Image (cartoon, rainbow over all chains, first blue to last red; front, side, top):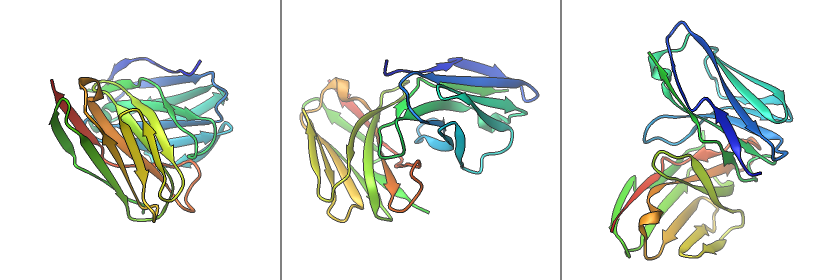
Length: 113
Length: 113
């Protein structure tokens, strides 16, 4: 199984809502990532978890809160988002650090109204 | 911080023509990876280059890593409509975080049948 799954595929939320994005992999990968991608732009790293511990936070606003409940799951909790946060949110995983290929999930298309 | 420049931003070719995209880093890279993202899709890993001057081939795709490990290129011979998508390079800065890849802005390739 070389698949990273993400739910939901699409999400529309108001600025006062709380929602969560979910990501799952069963490849035994020890690193998991959240990226944000705007249209016609490259993926922009948000967070990295390594061995279930937060390794990198790229100065992401606190309205985004990551969580890694176990080695296979990664969540991104969303609260009080702004319209400019609308984007494709990609989860990825890799066996180890950046010398290993990253497997990306299909993403969650988020629209903040 | 590390920057990875990628050119051209767009390339439109006739089917059968060749295509090349170039990446240039402001700092020495430990490794560079290439990803392809189809329209509406997610990035998919193509290859990783690690050694100075390394050249790797995958069928019609040829990847090169510069001698100084600051630049890389992807060349596609005789493009096909299935090659359509955005090609991203992503590099890890020497001495930088083991988990952070810096993506180039990508080159969008369109192929006219």
